Length: 163
Length: 163
DNA sequence: TACCGATTGCACAGACTGATCAGGAGATCA
DNA sequence: TGATCTCCTGATCAGTCTGTGCAATCGGTA
Image (cartoon, rainbow over all chains, first blue to last red):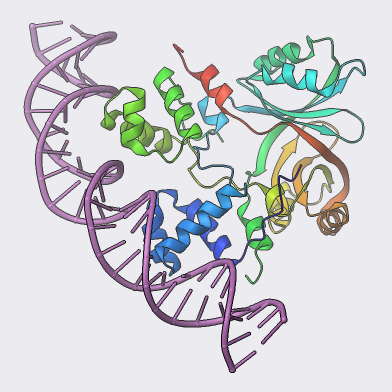
């Protein structure tokens, strides 16, 4: 699962990632100035992080809630033994409202994150999900408020040695 | 919660977001060429999306699993009525391994996503979480495999009108 | 028909990128 | 101590992009 070898970050990597997260549009040159290192160093560090997979990408982070999908829910699925996980994953991949899915331990087989335009719309999506033989039943939890929005930076600082 | 008014995307927005997601480093000019529109249009669209909050940012998307945190888990917390959600959120915010947290409906009060270096490390993090008076107990689900990695693009295409 | 927002095409100066190279600093090993 | 390696530095070069502003155009609307 873990791609190749784990990437060990250092303090400079952590500062670099933090700075880029806060001001992604400043460019490599300005970044190097802020960090007090040579431009080539910044480019080399970035290339390395991307090459090793530590950075998945720099794409725009779209906020589902702002483009009309204000409801977030976590749905636990119980899948039929006769169907493989792969088949279920394929089914789920075809539903845009399914933002991610994991196989899990415990009471349930798959946990997925689902967004919808409204509670009624959520019902529609869930119906679509369970309208597949491989899925026996679904248990839905609705997210009421976002206490902590997704973040990785604190973890990056923890992971960095000598910081 | 939803910042201002929902942003209604159109086909061009969807194509723009898709292209930027696939090749974030191509720059505005190249983007305009690929989309067949004027450079100013691309800039205006992007500015608008950012201003309205549809795009949260362009920061590097760090992959926790690659920097040493290979274990992902979802932990449901039951919190004491005497403490507010806010207090619990503050507590959780101080723990880097807590990547996100939501208040939820159903059997439990808070659902959070937690990563750790190993199962033993996960135990340490959970102990840290429950070592707080406001939290009565924690129920942990471990993610075994990532069936669908987090994605938003299919949703963007769905949200766009006239696509 | 007049108005309005959005898009276009163009222009300019300034700044950045990608690539490359020689030299230096620090760590490792025999 | 000396050889070797890796990483960082500082600099150069041509080519390209960005930020900005403006006048004209287009499509839909009052």
